[in-house]
Image (cartoon, rainbow, N blue to C red; front, top):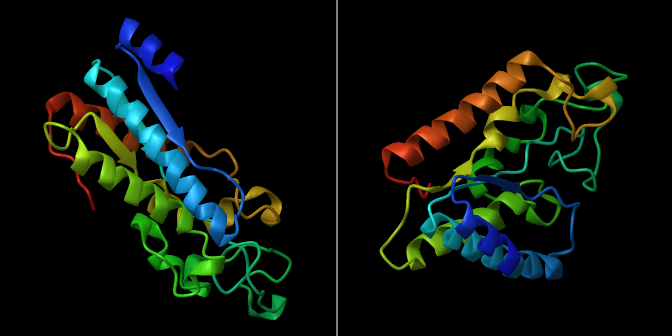
Length: 193
């Protein structure tokens, strides 16, 4: 992390975009992720203090035909799916509307949104503990809610995590990116959600 910070100090006109796309982890490893994110956000804040804009991207929505939308949760019968041979289902089928913004599903052990919850906690802590208060140059990209309605945009309906190329999806993500950079450049207050 010292090499990244040193490089950013030498060239602060950089935009950092990071995210947590790690696989499902057992609960004890969540504390390890939180510890790693604390380090990540401290390095990002050092880069911000050197003049960079730093963005951290939420994990995108998953749409597995399970009770939580996550891969390891218990499944639903194919007859209950909107398209029987398609493994992915809309968020409404597994109550995933509570997964965005770092909120936990009631069955949080199998929740696909737990990574975002850990990331938002680390982001809030980094912003609140920063000398000088929160900075608009460190922002979260809200990709979970953006991808939540796109259950039918997964490759072949079998991989319910990754998304097919779509000009609309690219445009929407680019819109989030441009808004975050503009907000940082304009000094608009950061939303701690």
